[in-house]
Length: 162
Image (tube, rainbow, N blue to C red):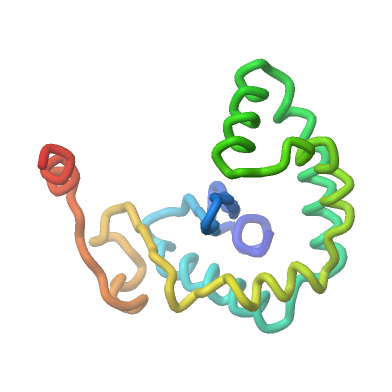
């Protein structure tokens, strides 16, 4: 909301979490102009730091829970999605009853649970940042964010072929 609505810095911005049997991946994505790349990226890190320090609000938690519960029905609306969900259960060693209790379990999540998880597992100092764009047009050099490595499309093709 701060990035897109309040400051008008992004076409789209959001976050996601993907769970795997032994680890999880938390990510933030943002589509912005080259000219606001560093400003927006620094703001994302500032927001995450604030959330780690101060936690989320009850209003933010309620909005997230409502969104997850309301979108759940769409995750079982086709045969393909049902099969994908079953693969997730099998691959992840998750109990077959997982989806039966899913919405109830989401409702049980508390603000304290989320805030403790954020403090313990959102490790900003270990973040990997992928920036795509015309670096000549960025508002400031990427090196302000730390060590950088330029990877070209040819680098990716070479890695794929090796």
